[in-house]
Length: 139
Image (cartoon, rainbow, N blue to C red; front, top):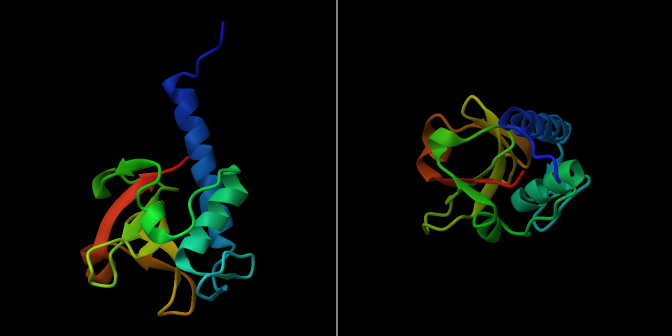
């Protein structure tokens, strides 16, 4: 008979994975943004999320922010947890065009084309608050 994980064990495993994702993602800070790349030394936004998820969990997620924004379990803004992927409609066309990884406290890490590198940005107000589409839980 299989042994089932308790809710506490499941949370602990998820929390451990999110800590691993956060730590690994932060090690990429400052690496250059280059369109259509997925690491290890340069990234575009979805290449960054793809690389971090693959390296920390072994899971392969789709490549491209639009398809990543439909992958995994939907998460609303108020229910985001560390390690969730976050998606934005930054082009004004209403569809997902940017991706990052939620760090908690209304902050996320992403490969920013405007900054030219991997950075941490706020989702509390401004551009990313206004353009937020959804979160996705893939761990």
